[in-house]
Image (cartoon, rainbow, N blue to C red; front, side, top):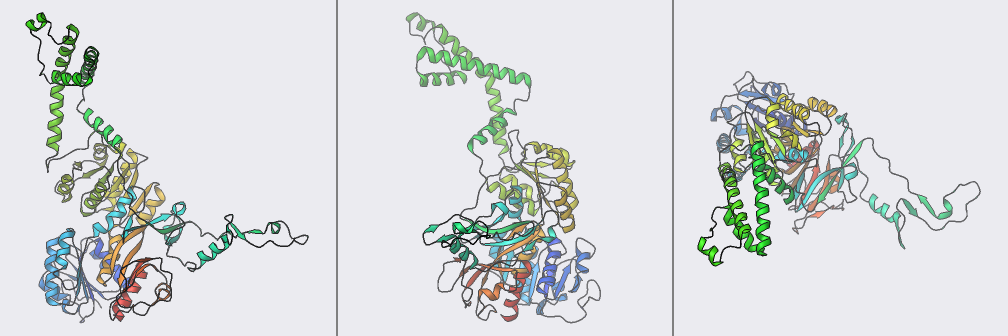
Length: 620
């Protein structure tokens, strides 16, 4: 089917279709997910056919119709046959617009499945309660963990029942891995990566254990224990006399491999107090920008220390010496009177009086500097005032771009204890107020990236994340960062896959992620009724962690683990049965059939999860 013209409804009546409202990158990826993996009819509602990704969406084979309306009104919803649609995805516009459209759609079609994008997740959860069959998702929140983890040089994680699932590569893979999720990993050609390749049976690891452990305990790893054999016949060669024969090494796939593993606690990136104290000292030193002022203060400090030592030597009381020194430093000393000196009741002699005078005079030098520092610290803490990165900022992550994704990533890194500095060219960006409220420094201005990154203290940073909505701008920021600091790690938001492939082949210590690529599978699965708990990145590929509920009438009833995994693209990693609330990890029974009330946690590719969701939709 095609549309008769922009702004008009489809020529042929359509029903049981899915509607995507938006023409941005997320809408583009979502339409591809629905058409290619779920094979469902899709109608797209865009505001302008000539802007953003609308022209590319029009060219996608399998799209039933594309309709143009400048605003998401009642008329626009009727134009895309909202009354007969199975699902509606609202992935563009403000939170307020999406809430209004979701409630209007439910009024037209009470049974429709509604998935809407919300930046304010708390508000989204409350709106979900007003909908009969709705889900609020945040694309930036879904993708933010992958960007933050890439900047720190570690895989992101998804929390499931107190365990944090993450992807480990090559030498980082431990024997307690849950399953292999990828092989043939080649940075020069990422298209060769195979997600969830065919795996050996569950009994294979137990067979290996039986070989390595005999009745009398463990034997040398890499060998198979055997009963002593008779003397070999001549010409058979060495090896059989010992009763041990080397176990054949498993054939390794070409390239690297990746595996799914679980941690009991998500690793944090705290900064120890010694480093924080050093940074504070360096931060304080920024007030001493004049060489003459530094010399004067250093001389005054040395004089105070010498005077303190004299007082301590004369009185032999450390506590009293600290007390009188601080009073003198603040100008509150009580001088000796002539009558006290004549009566012999003075403070302790000429040298003590000299020491107190020195401390008092030096206090006059320190007082203005201390006042300036206090005023600056208190003033910078007021919400809304700009705060530039200080001279003590070290080992931080620079986030370029404070849109939805940039704000989420900066906030997550801050919560993990990682120092963050943000760079934004638009002074009206919505994320500026949010990060300033957290005390995160922001560099504002529309100058060249070289100058902005210098102000963000690029030389002392550990990573730069470029998160604007434009691929060329992000690449420019990454290249400028690498030029200014060849050792810095760069993470770039790129929509185009070919662009990302060239990026990986050209730069080392770099990573590329796509917000829409990470978020679109979660939106598509939610549109089909599945709960995606999170996404894990294998370079530019996505592994989904989803939890499926077996409800009455569901197509999952009667299926066993073999049925779910056999076509490929799915691994059952945990199960929670209706009779108990305990989650069983590594459930090995491949014959037990699912019953109503059961829940399963799966690791799946996009096509694998689409197949399971198709079972839910078509047979449920």
